Length: 133
Image (cartoon, rainbow, N blue to C red; front, side):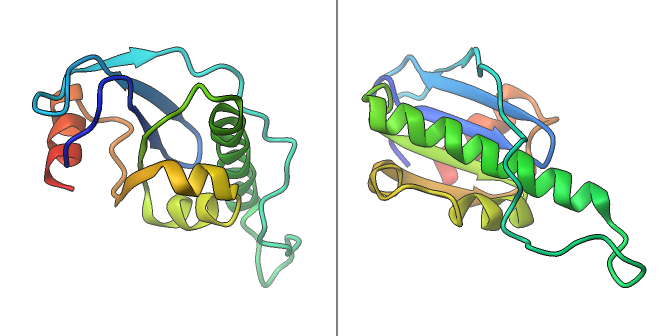
């Protein structure tokens, strides 16, 4: 996949967000890490279920809330005009949760999505995933 200069790449799992900006041009990807800002996890994810003996996983609710907060942050960037093109790389479950919270303006700016957990991987692995998407 070719990304324009200035395009953002968001690498997300249920607890971490890394943002990268393409400093290269459409023919040569050169990602540089950006500050992410604060991600609000006050938002509850869309799971809509409480913990119980049948569903004891509070950490999953926290991960869903984090994903909703990431989507909110990306939505603000898209609506504010500071995001022109975006690639999201996220763990499959996190990606599903993110999609539930995308604003239509953000969806229109998505150049692609990669369903992989690459938060702990090197910049070279992230660039390779973007190029092969």
